[in-house]
Each structure stands twice: as C-alpha cells, then as structure tokens.
Image (cartoon, rainbow, N blue to C red; front, side):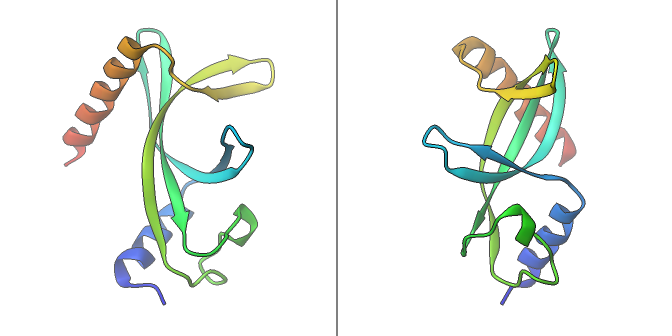
Length: 113
C-alpha cells in the first residue's frame, strides 16, 4: 500500500511524461524530466529516475491500476541535441561541461526552495 508521500509523488508524476531510456546493456529505465535549461548555446535536461518495487513499464503507469510503493531514484543530466527525427538525449562526456551544467542545475533547484 502507498503512503501519503508516495501517493502525492505519483500524482505529480502523472502530470509529466514518463520516458524510457535504455542503459548500455539494453535494460529499460523509467525517467521523468525535472528541468530543461540552456547554457552556452546548448539545451540540457535533468531527469529523475523512477524506481519501482515491482517491474512496472510505461503501460502500467496509472494511479488506479498501480498501487505498489513508488519512489524516486537518481538524477541524471543529459544534453539535448537536435536531429532530423527530433531531439535526442546524449550523455555529457566533457568533465568541464558536466561540472558547469551540474552547477547551473543545482542553482536552479536552490532557487525553487
């Protein structure tokens, strides 16, 4: 059974799109976008992973049907790159770029508090 905090988090998540990213082994992981921002001509996205007790996939993501405990996992930062097929999320390889983007994201989080 969900506690009140998890229930509130699930309600918040239903207002945003849940996306699936594949790891290096091809395993799917669910995420939602926390923030999108620009820096030095690039766009970046901060994603929050959704960890689940049971194996839940996007089709099962519905408050009425899903009553197991749900909690948030790690936050990742990715760069948005435009392609002919739309935006693609890519990892940030450069350490200086990552540190700059992480600092911006942390500042944006602090401003929300």
